[in-house]
Length: 97
Image (cartoon, rainbow, N blue to C red; front, side, top):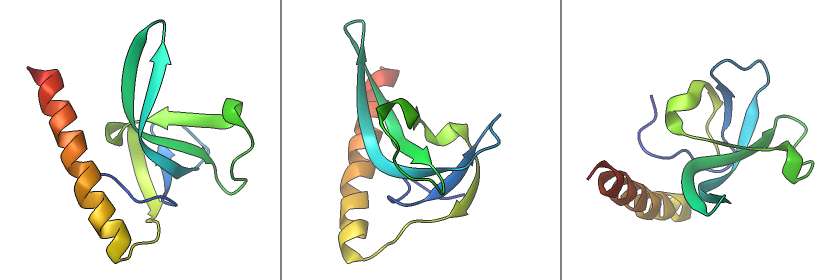
């Protein structure tokens, strides 16, 4: 399994789902009823792409059933991944305290 956060463009199938989604954002903040929740990813349907905010999904790594394709990776993405993986780990350790 992939360690840390997946890159933008990754196509996955979520548990208890039949439709694949494509990652379009990482470490996404959702505010509802005054509470903030940080999700690992935002995604849209694959292959359709972004079709509006009502067709956007938030989920975490532990909800991924299968990875079909890992998004584009280069030096810039690897540097970004190092930063966001550290932020995510800090957030997770803060929530565990």
